[in-house]
Amino acid sequence: MSVSAASAASLHPRDPAALSRLALTLLALAALWPALQITEFNPAVLFEPGNAHTMGRFLGQFIPPATAPEFLRLVGKSTLETLAIANVGIALAFLIAFPLSLATSTALSKSAIGPAPDWRLRRALRYPGRALLILLRGIPELVWALLFVRAVGLGPTAGVLALAITYGGMLGKVYAEIYESSATQPARALMQAGAGRLQAFFYGVLPVVLPEMVSYTVYRWECAVRASVIMGFVGAGGLGQQLELSMRMLNGAEACTILLTFLLLVLLADAVSALFRRWLA
Amino acid sequence: MNARGIVTLLVVAALLWMSITFLELNTSELFNAETLTSFGAYLLQFFPPDTSGPFLGKLLSGSLETVAISALSTLLAAIAGLLIAVPAAGRFGIAPRLGARMLLNALRSVPELVFAALMVIAAGLGPFPGTLALALHTTGVLGRLFAEALENTPRAPADALLHAGSPRVAAFFYGTLPNVLPQCVAYALYRWEINIRMAAVLGFVGAGGLGQMLHVSLSLFHQQQACAVILAMLAIVILVDEASALLRRRLA
Image 1: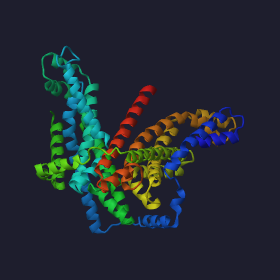
Image 2: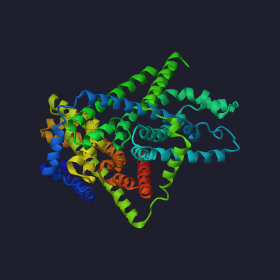
Image 3: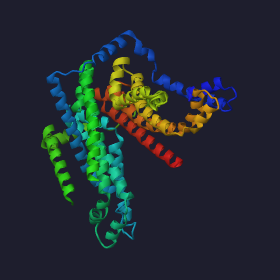
Image 4: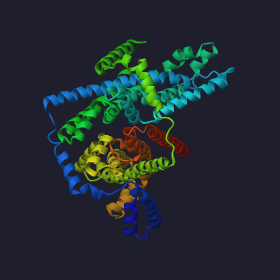
């Protein structure tokens, strides 16, 4: 934007839009000035001899990556741990999300199809469920991880719990939306014929929405793999914890190996989730 | 249920069981009365949140810092992303295209938090490394999106300008850029939304903002301050969510 306005002003003095663009750019820069101050923006820091030397030496160690068998074994174990955290985390998240999605979705609302004497109460009951879902997913997983590391100690348990909570909130919200956006006629027909809500759900809603639910859950699993690496940075086990250790000790070769493993793992998770979804479709 | 569904369920159950045994999760140890009461006691220490005047002031400046980090990093990333997107869209031939794409992929696949830890090594503690880290990752994401937008935009306007004798740079600025700019701005705003959230937690590795405050107060066992910081994060996340939903509904 700024480039376009500046060159417009210099190259084409007759450009009718130049003045307004220039003004807009200057205004944006003026608005940005406080941001530069608040973030202590100062690229010169990067080139101070001490900083540049440390960083240079750290990055210089990246090649060649560490390949000592013992270290590789550790990385392999951490990778498996990361995957296991993602698996168990998603499973627990499902256990949290499924009941909450049933409780908060309006797809099984009886008042939508006819008189339901207790509809005020039912509607009021949905709100605490929704608030809980917002609370669960509104606090970032990294914060949950940090809290659980303080509560249950360093290691994968904190990661599993943090994933379960945040992803429980996300899955619960999306499941409820999926029920609501699906075709509601089968469930309504069942309820009109006297079926209970749960019966209507399992025979009227679930068969319709299952593919979409599975697809979204698998996608979330893919995100969970990435998240469980990142949560390791605050001590929640897995590959991230190793990476944090290596970086803190400024061991570039180890950091490089772990980063490469992380990239491979993410690619693998992508491929597995794509394959899985295609297989089920 | 068909055979495929049953096989899937069995495989998933087996993998889950393997994961649980691998992690050596001890559910009876985790969910017994003693751990639950000690966990409950720990949670109770967070209440009531610290709302004393001086701390609220710090909280406000921490929130401002978070917003500033996210805004500045998104802007830097948008500029850098656009600069890399031009070669990545194949405007300068095949070799620069491949090089630019590789650079963008590398930037995109390293998580923000890893960049933040790196930048803290390079520039010391504070909001500046956080800004750089977010900008680096976001450059990768936006650069790729911008490159796709550039590739998909019709060439006719720029070609017309070129045939009329306009220099290439001017043809780009007046023939191509106006077409892709709205889309690019939309992408940048979307990333900003994500970056506000990220900026709130990047501080865990020392990169400023609310995250650093939370990390410090948890490390000093100031749970009530930590609770206030978490509430501020929650407020920012919900605010951004609602604002963007509202904007999108207006624009739709």
